[in-house]
Image (tube, rainbow, N blue to C red; front, side, top):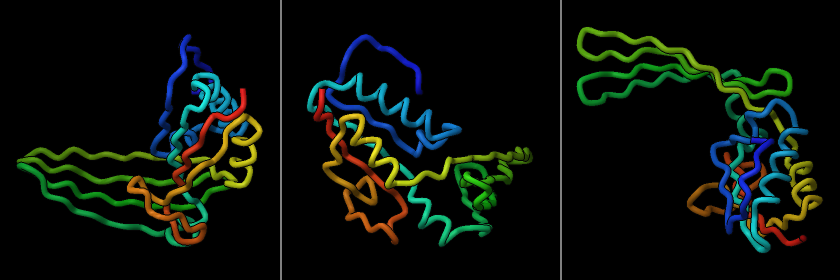
Length: 160
């Protein structure tokens, strides 16, 4: 994500599901944003979907949730545990899928770098992006710093 060269530019780039935050440090996030900038046409749009960790930590730190869902021929039983560990936001997912007489167990760990949105916005500006909109959802809901679960940035390449 931080080291690619496609040999052409695009009108827009979309980076969803906090994928930038899967990188181990902010230096690689900045490097990735620079690569995206280089691959955008002048005036092109960068669409970033990021977690709002302040809200997640406030509402979900060390909270365990259980869920059961039926699907065609089976049941999914899962448990989610979300917590802050150092500079990372972690979500552990584990459970089982029952389909007929078969049981499939799973365990997964998702880890995101906890980032400073102020630092991210400074870096975007330094690279040459202007943040033209901020939303709290893919539906375009108004962003509230303390109450929104997501940070959706719509940025435009303004400097060459």
